[in-house]
Every structure is written in structure tokens, then in C-alpha cells.
Length: 227
Image 1 (spheres, rainbow, N blue to C red):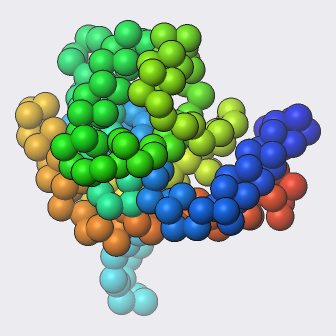
Image 2: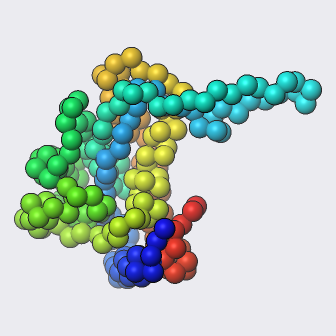
Image 3: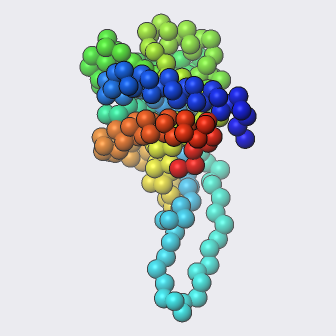
């Protein structure tokens, strides 16, 4: 449940985003680098759409069994821009993301941008992330400032305006749906294959949707965007 203060902050952030877009246009979207973490499971159930079946009107109703996620899972850190994947890292088993580990990932991200997006570091990077603790720790913000990156304001409790949450991760989970992986290596390979193989238009549309969603956030007076 969003409080009135949360809604106000969301509207302010959306207006700030749209003002920058109005000023710089496509150059603004070109400069955005976004990313987040997500769990990927050894077994991911099919979505409702994937499990639909064609049947005759007189056929018995198909039996459906409740599925649960496999206990085996790996955390993936994924960063991307409108042109495609920049970096995907997997956390070693038994470890968690803290500020120190996240800073190592950001250094790897900077190296990936340097190698894959020639000139982007010297031109401008606008970095978008959510408000998880490792992301906003002092050591993290100091490193981002050292890089000279600008940040795109993102308010708490707002996955509906975070591109990884509303665009990339749902499609990744849909792709993995109904598949069982025997090893972590198989799972990692499939995740990387999907992310690297996705068309540029897929990533581009995810960034473009930010404009529409920010405007919708304003139109809804900060309420949560369902679709």
C-alpha cells in the first residue's frame, strides 16, 4: 500500500524523468543504463498462458496440479541499456549481495560499458537502479560519483516503473517456464543464452516504456501502475 507521501515522491520522480526526456529526447534514453538482481530457479512453473490447452467442449476438464519453485536457485545480476545486454553475473552459492560485492559488480559493469559501448563513458551515463540497501549504501554512491555517472531518481516501492521488473525479468521467467535444469551450469547457460540472444528491439522497447509509465504514474497521481 502506497502512502500519500510515497505517491507524491513517485510523481516528483516521474516529472523529473519526463523533463529530462523533453530536454534531451532520444539522447536521454540512449544514456540510460539499468539493472537489478533476480532469482532464477532450477525449476520454474509454466505461466497460465503457457499451460493453456485446446480441448473439445465435451472433453473432461484437465487436472492441474499446484506447482512450487524448486529449492535450487541462483541470483543473477543483470544490467542492460536500449541496445542490449551489458553484464550478467551470478552470485556464488551461499553468498549474498552486500555493498562491497555490489561495488565489484559496478566496476565490472563500467568495464563492460567501456568495451561494448564505445564513447558512452565519455559522453554520459545515467544510471538507474532501485533502492535496495547495497544500491544506496555510502560506499556505492561514492563509487558511482567517482565514475561520474548521473543517477535516474527511483522511489521506494516502485517496481512498476523499473524496466527490469516490468519488462526484462517477466520475459526471462516466461522463457524459463516449464523447464527443469539439473545443474546450476545448465541454468546459467540458458539465462545467458536468452539474454544475449534477445533482439535489440526487445531491449529498446523496455527503455522506451519508461516514458509511458512515468506519464501514467503522473496521470494516476502516483498510484501503482497495474499494466
